[in-house]
Length: 146
Image (tube, rainbow, N blue to C red):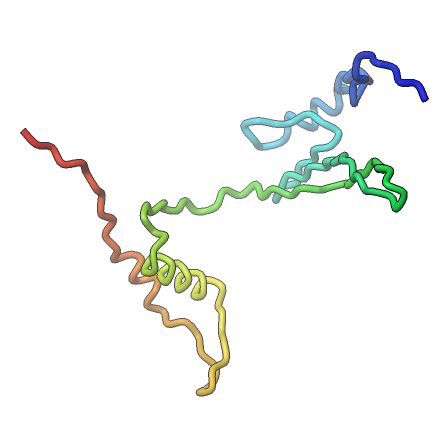
């Protein structure tokens, strides 16, 4: 068995091809501040669809003790909504019991969750969203002494 030490080959040795004029024309019609010119990215009015090929290697040990390296490829497709969601508020110190309970209540209301107990079906109360509007965010400032 011989081995050769040399430069690692590039994963994608092909040179990028320039876009055709009709492709540039199509991309100029996309209503977005930044447009990615790639054959793997497609724009629809609702979302940006991106195709991605994930290459990896799985190494297994054979019964005889040899290691076997196997190339794996997964074709992934990512969908990104183009509509900007409502802006939220980041609350610091929200990880305690009260914050967790409040967050769970807000999500339960928003998702319309329900659950069964021995006394029947229960749904979240509608007080969680109104409570979140009444919360005061306390800011901790360092003490200044003279």
